[in-house]
Length: 86
Figure 1 (cartoon, helix red, strand yellow):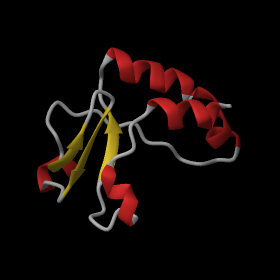
Figure 2 (cartoon, rainbow, N blue to C red; figure 1 turned 30 degrees about the vertical axis):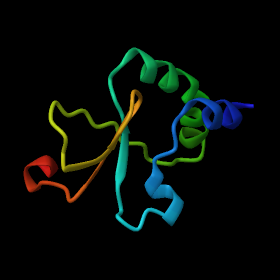
Figure 3 (cartoon, rainbow, N blue to C red; figure 1 turned 180 degrees about the horizontal axis):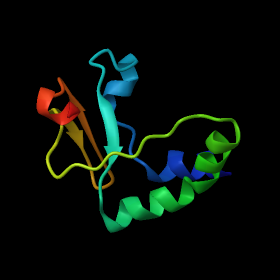
Figure 4 (cartoon, helix red, strand yellow; figure 1 turned 45 degrees about the vertical axis):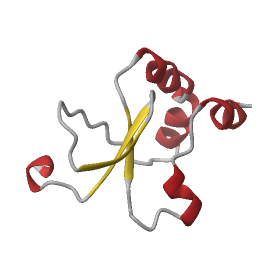
């Protein structure tokens, strides 16, 4: 039920078609559309917490690397900038 909603509503970046050989990392953008995505992810966050998976929330005003993909919901970067890791 939950996964189907994401498959139908969240665009799939093209680099996943080749198993992400460019090693892009994707984040949700801070937009009204992505906020709904985060609300719908709550059961997955709860499941991760239940099994002790560590989730990290990162916030940045600037892209932490070279933008390789962007849509209304998400942004993907590769080649991280050293200053982004501080």
